[in-house]
Image (cartoon, rainbow, N blue to C red; front, top):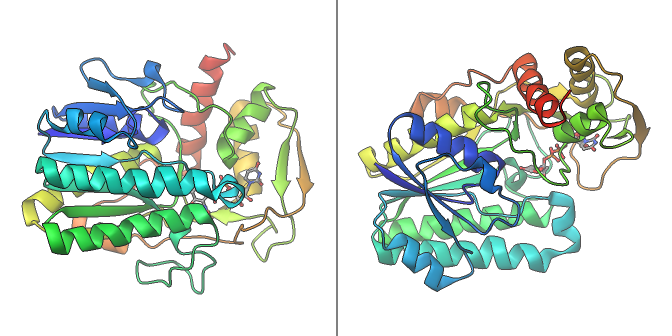
Length: 325
Ligand code: UD1
């Protein structure tokens, strides 16, 4: 099969590329390299330097004939989306509409969207299933919900089959060390903890100690990026074989607190990792945990690498090597 990954040089995209390549598919990587890394591109991939806002570049890449596309080309900093919404509407919404319409023109049959648990907003019940109310708390989450809605229309009107994969908190690195690139200026918890561990930043700021959770810190559902990547392969196969669109959560179904992540990181790295409590971050729910039953039932997807140990160890290994420790 030929699969073209938009945003394929980013953190999740490179793991998705690896999963498709491992089973012998032809992989294309389309990226504007604003945050994606050239070093992450697996030899043998077809590479297009392009932007999803540039229709000519999109047409040229899609003209090479792809069975399916995976769309991971989005800005994803929830906090930034609240102060710079125009950046998110242009890239995430306008860019996605460009991509969807060009895929339809090019005759692409399957479209996998990197969606997010951020579309649900503050949970009204746990664990969160796909029917949970969708009230995004941040503009980033709204952009993902908007793209899902567009895909539902294109499924009906243009027979574009899609899989919307609602990731919970993507974490970890390929455990064989095949992906070594670090994200620039990360804002997510685990890379921030790692930067504090290697001394790249002074301290981890823990956003809030008074949530109604097991230890007062925020609880999230961390899912290993290799598990997510396998979910993309299964999703492409499913929508093409069944000629049917799907929307599924991909989460580990276990809730881990900020302090649990910190303690495990201290244990695995053997480093002190300075940390201090600060106030809550705006828009952060206390607890987000998925049920992935629908992905289990429809795709046969079960996380295999998403234990706390595996997530932290695989991440620390990559930081250790990058910082020559
Ligand atoms: C957010 C989005 C998620 C999105 C992801 C992509 C929401 C609700 N979630 O995840 O959908 O896919 O970003 O980047 O919009 N924390 C600290 N200190 C830090 C950083 C984080 O204490 O320096 C805490 C947070 O308060 C939270 C947990 O760690 O409790 C995880 O935060 P983070 O890694 O930023 O992910 P989310 O905000 O859950």
